[in-house]
Length: 507
Image 1 (cartoon, rainbow, N blue to C red):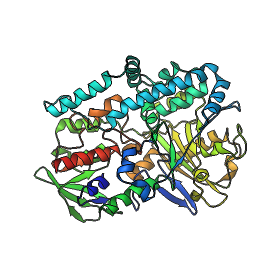
Image 2: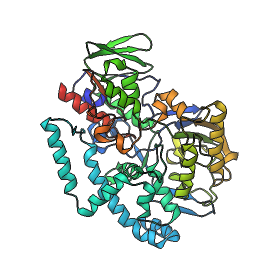
Image 3: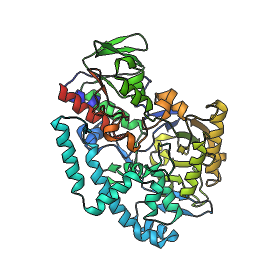
Image 4: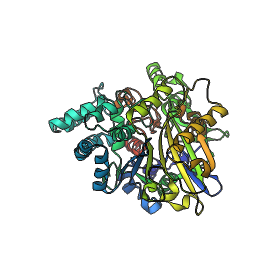
């Protein structure tokens, strides 16, 4: 957002609480020589038009391919899909000839769905309750867009918006490894299981990832996700923006129902015509300003906004490469994702424990080896491993203690060791992050990686609250632009882009 405003000629100051920019999109050298993608770790949702508008490749952005997904199975077998489409089909056919036959049809259908829904990613959500003609015209255009879809695509879209990812995939496939791995895209960052209604949309949300025009393409930013944040920061600075680190904001200064500046944690005050918060809705509305300055119904909606965190992270420094039991030795499979998702039942059982306030003892884990993709991430011959984990509930029974954090880390390592026999012998260092750690480190309420659940009740004109989805707030000059606004979370950039467009309209 800052880069777009600065590009438009506005004087912009960015205030970052930590010592480096990026929030959850950072790369840090936690142990000497080992660079961790501490929180977020892959890139796909970053909008191509933002990359072009801000000329991010000129500022150092390089996306390296993450072409494969390996799903090791408890019986020593595996499912392996990579950039070789026909090789992937052959491997799927080992588990189910029917699934191999349906795979391309599924891909085509999801491609059309992604293209259809992509339309709303670039629009400011219209308010269906207003009498403003612009909102009604926008709603009419959106209705025309979707009603012009072929009948079968419209039916499919209705299913995606209402079904669980497991039920949706059951209509296409039969083999456990394929359904388990694909259903995992529907639960990432949610406090839901693959059989929970609404997770099919989350599956589609992740399917909308696009790199160089290819949907469902995932990559790794050279230098880690901090490379993305740094490229955007350099773009903003090239347009004249000023970036200050170690500059946490204590509160927004409001006079006469108008935001006039901010007070920093160090006591300094900065004054401006416009104040924009990229924090989550709870911090934006309930902490940075006095809730008494806001309408009571908005305060009630924000307090009810679901931000329960469910995701943890385990980052490992390794003495050598991991050796998978199902596919021993070095190879291209180590340059992709390793998904511990052997079946829908496996993931649902992991969710069962989280439902009752415990972390999953056998969790869903999505791993990558950044140092295989980008050797600069670790010393020569050494490696780093990034493990995204579900489930780790923020509201853990008894609360998160140091002992429970380490027990959670042990559960992740024990689970991975069932598939990677040499793992425990090659770990040099480990970093274990719970949702509480994420909240305390980067300020995401309850450690929710999307700043709020991607449920149907928290999307589009309801994100973050009915009547306040257009990035404005009831306080004049005070705006919101975080992932808690439309179109949602992930390393996307779209909320900031759309917020900047709305701010410039007011100017």
